[in-house]
Image (cartoon, rainbow, N blue to C red; front, side, top):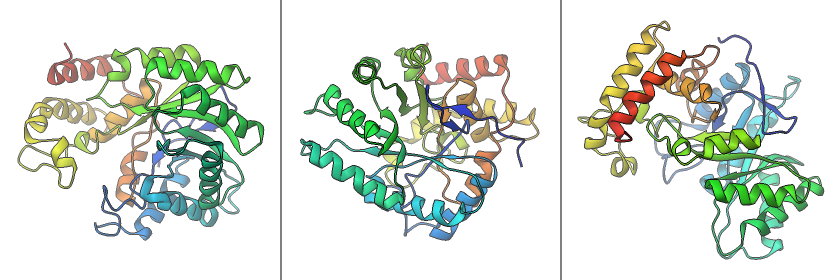
Amino acid sequence: MVNQIELVNLGKSDLLISPMGIGTWAWGDSFFWGYGKEDYTDGDIKEAFKLCFEAGINFFDTAEVYGFGHSERILGDLIKTETAGTGKSIIVGTKFFPYPYRLGQNSFSKALSRSLARLQMEKIDLYQMHWPFPPITIETWMDRMADNVKSGLVNIIGVSNYSPQQMKNAYNALSSRGISLASNQVKYSILDRKVELNGLLELCQELGITVIAYSPLEMGMLTGKYLPSSPPSGSRRYRYRRDYLRRIQPVISLLKEIGQSYGGKSPAQISLNWIMCKGAIPIPGAKTKRQAQENIGALGWRLTKEEILSIEDIADRCMGNN
């Protein structure tokens, strides 16, 4: 087990979270992740949750659209049954999806109420706007988010998939209501460093906004599990084709090499630790005990500056960022 985890503030709030959270997209999602069809069950998810909780991971991220609400239900049940009497709390982040037909305040209120019911909570710790989709403006959505902070149904507010300018607009809108934007959840991995290139990471650091990194393992590609001769199955095979897997092999080789100097850390553990060293909160998935153990192994130590630079250099060369 890892050493005592040092908690960090979520944005400028007083909420303290572990430096790594757990993403629960796969909990209940049968379309993309094969829930109910693949080789993991509710029992496996329960074991993964318990292991993460016992290791000190206290931040779990979900969304109303994950499994059409089923992810929220699973997480709510686990929090109720597995944390009772422990004296430890879980910080939950969930998301509102701005479907084009959700035009009125009533739609927003209903969605929030349903998420609260599925999670079996009276207040959501971190409520996030899932995408910056029109036709409703960012300013209008943030105003509605702020209303729910003022009413006591939401603790702090985050956004997801917002560009630097969109995030700045959200930040300014909330600031006018006396509320700080806590986080921006974006795709971020060694193989996808767009948030560094477009200035988002720097802007977040400047404004005191936490970057929550989803797909920190590039949907499994950074585990070393997949090769050009054995690509992923399902819908991922269309995104990560053999030529992509061929390109990233030098990155995987370096991650393995660095891992050996840390007692045999895996490419996945090196990748997650890299995210934390960049000041972001990775939220890898954990649908089995094995995956949970893998994630936990990324905690309690830090890569050196030299190792970070060498990883970024080879990743840039492989991904054509130079």
